[in-house]
Amino acid sequence: MGGLSIWHWLIVLLVVVLIFGTKKLRNIGQDLGGAVKGFKEGVKGAEEEAGAAKSAAADAANQAKIGAQTIEGEVRKETTTKS
Image (cartoon, rainbow, N blue to C red):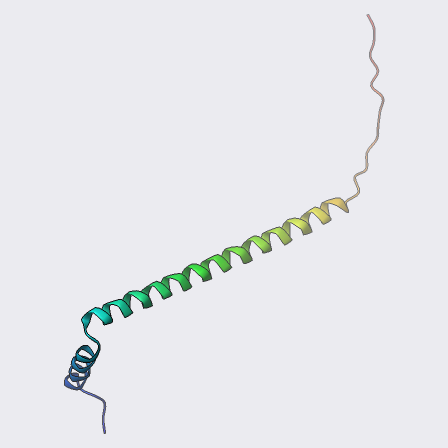
């Protein structure tokens, strides 16, 4: 009733290899690896999109904040002296 020993796992592995063959198992492993790689690239792309959208929103907020500021000053006419 306890856990399976190493011999049980070796027998299961042998049966799987006999049923599917090594070539088919290799192809399944390559397909699974490709799927995992594609998933990681998709997640990375989604994170980059989220970061770009977040920075664009922050830029828009900064532009709105800059546009709402009042700058006080005085305009003086430049006078030139003729010698």
